[in-house]
Length: 346
Image (cartoon, rainbow, N blue to C red; front, side, top):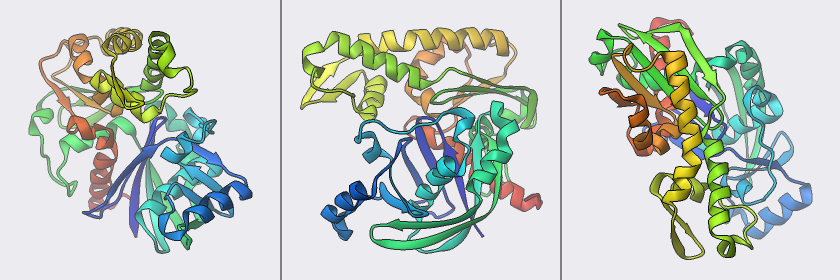
């Protein structure tokens, strides 16, 4: 049976399957249920050949999901454990499946969650198991999710560093010899996980703290608006994708112009970085107790250069290339799934 590894983060939805080509997707965490008239108007105008994968009907209800949903203005976005319902998490999972496959089939779903949500893992699994009738691009398909399981998000980042593609061999033996700290900075939470020598997870330090990149995005928008009043006066919402790019690059592109925004980025990130530094000392005890630190999650990629002075550690490892670090957890999740398969524990 095919498996989809899903990281339904609070900022970006990421998913991976075993297919070599086109086996990964990422799209903004944005969803809005449409009226029948809205859905028909948009899909009829586009025509079957030009429809976006963002517009789909799931179990009879029309939705717009992803980047197109962000452009629709007011969207539905649940955070934390409120996501784990069939009408929300299940819909997002089905939207991800429909981007991979245009034919009906059975699936397993291996979903990630912050360590602090472990007591709600049953809700996550029940939210996705079942039959899903999908219409997209004028074609109908049926997905059945007959099995689901879960893993901690930072464990995905760890396994992406630790294991080879088949999930059965070590690829980063240096981690085996010491004690490691995994830090996963996501949309609304930052997760902290300890790893003992040999790659064994130490769940005595497995914490989720409400510090996320979404607060940086919000603070950046406030600062950018205050400093560019005339340029944005007719723009009710800055495009989130452009904001994320600006935070990483220090340049905001919009209206055919490029705006230097290093000062706004500095203002937006300073509060979050101070909170991460405080948490680092309070929960993890600072740098001296760790032989290496593994950074994963999209927020780590955006803030990487600003995190290094806070961590004050000479052995900081990125869970993937910086431009793909938002995919590290699902890539590692697939390696973990393959390890579990080999051990016959699924």
